[in-house]
Length: 283
Ligand SMILES: O=c1ccn([C@@H]2O[C@H](COP(=O)(O)O)[C@@H](O)[C@H]2O)c(=O)[nH]1
Image 1: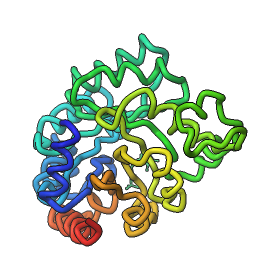
Image 2: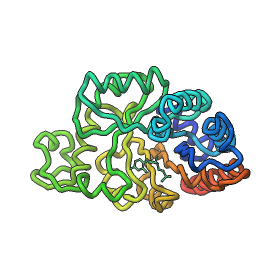
Image 3: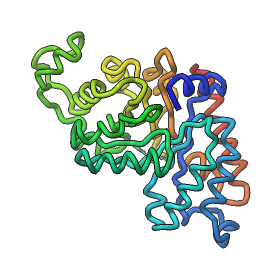
């Protein structure tokens, strides 16, 4: 899916919601627990219930990898069930030396034909490049994550690299110390374009969004952390939206486990619709 198609979906649905399929088999409704294909049936019901209110689905691969071989197969069938109109994201947070990263890119863009995959940037350019070599596919690089641990490294102040002054002369004052995540956004943005690169910015980091937008005004941001993690959708929209909307806000638990009994699909539909209605007011 390309950027224009994504923007068109957002405008048509008046939604920038991404539903996270973090399907934990221990949390499935009791009536599904005995079903031989419970996780897939759950995913199908969630997709049917929410697809009119969202523009994207994010499959966090951890929830499927932890089921072993069966989990990969469920992930594959779930991906095939996601409507082609919706951006499909593998939240796999991969990153390794170049030739290994190329295998990860092949896994998530060819073997499993996702539109996008999340990538950890800390092994540098050769670890990200292979994900940028596919037409109409996206690398979504971790920028400033939603968790408390983001303080451990991402917010550390560093002396910026000399070549950043050339990349962003309007904002990088010589010798101004910057947070490591700012350095990541600046450098990684130069490796790709707004057509093949997005960044993960946690909704719990909304106070940094103005600063982030001064570095990457035009990129789409994947924003997890509303709902169960307590981030504010209103603040994210206020400080993070750009001329194209430029946001995909993810909610996983708040949608898929809105109810944990037989009514789970209707409850998920209601939760997704509530997000859509609020998002519509910000567009
Ligand atoms: O910074 C990050 C990066 C990824 N995630 C992932 O997003 C979802 C959030 O789930 P909720 O249930 O809506 O809290 C989950 O898959 C995380 O692994 C993140 O939360 N923060």
